[in-house]
Length: 130
Image (cartoon, rainbow, N blue to C red; front, side, top):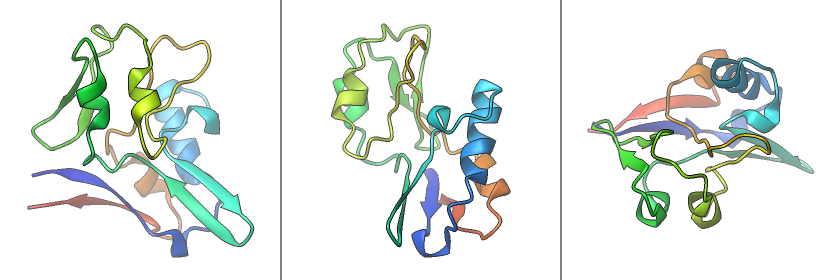
């Protein structure tokens, strides 16, 4: 059963709790630039950017097959296979495949739900599709 994050921009208050939860869990530091989810406020509009797990262009583009799809439908990166070419970052249409300067490998959302658990307004949730 595929799972992914669901984001409701209308409920988002741009507090950044989701980005803190994500970067703290994966990188052990509160740094929004290292978060797999991004919140950007453009005037009155709020844009939540995260991997939708469905386009899979990154999987097709990876020359060493370091990106695969789990049984739950989540695109996963094998850091041992990744050569850091960043082809996946370049092809991602939503900007959800990310790279932080100084890190060897790119990173992306794996639908763990850490951000959803910390969201005070319920703007983020985990969707499990049948």
